[in-house]
Length: 117
Length: 110
Image 1 (cartoon, rainbow over the protein chains, first blue to last red):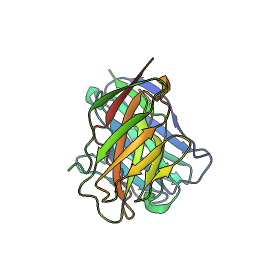
Image 2 (image 1 turned 90 degrees about the vertical axis):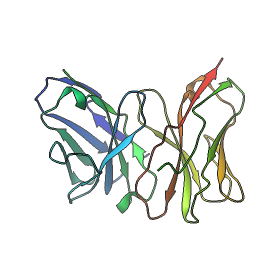
Image 3 (image 1 turned 30 degrees about the vertical axis):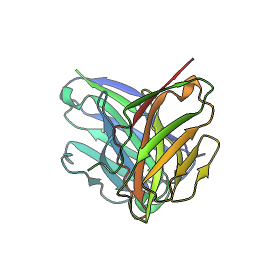
């Protein structure tokens, strides 16, 4: 149980284009989902937290207009990187929690590797 | 502001127990100790968590000192597939964020 999937697992895009990454909780309802970013040889950095049906809360320094998050259902959250640039190339990981506020364990997806040319 | 301190790396022989230390000297009474690990190019995997009692599950054991200022994650019989970065995280009951530090890179050698 507690499986989280991400799609795609990797994507290559041209600079200036937008890329959408999906995060799904397969066997539980996730009231809270989290998006992290991880640069090579660095740790995970939380980008934003979203609760189903409400606007995402972004961490300091993360541009909300560039990283659009939608959590429209209890099993799906999407992250759209708009007008991607090479510096956005990174490993994007989502996690999901079955309880509001994420107070229980977070279950992580396998990650999406984004390369912007 | 790091709440935990872990050694940057450690080696372990396959089949032997791996003992991973973590210092959390400023831990508060309502904060739990969580352990996650991340195998290369994968998402983190939950291992175990505890408040003050020792905990054991099918993956590992967590030993928390009586003053709760430090803990040790024990992998009883390390395998090559346990090679990963292990993160010790302190998290309060009212917190929803997981703050990942640098972790400990564990390399299991045959």
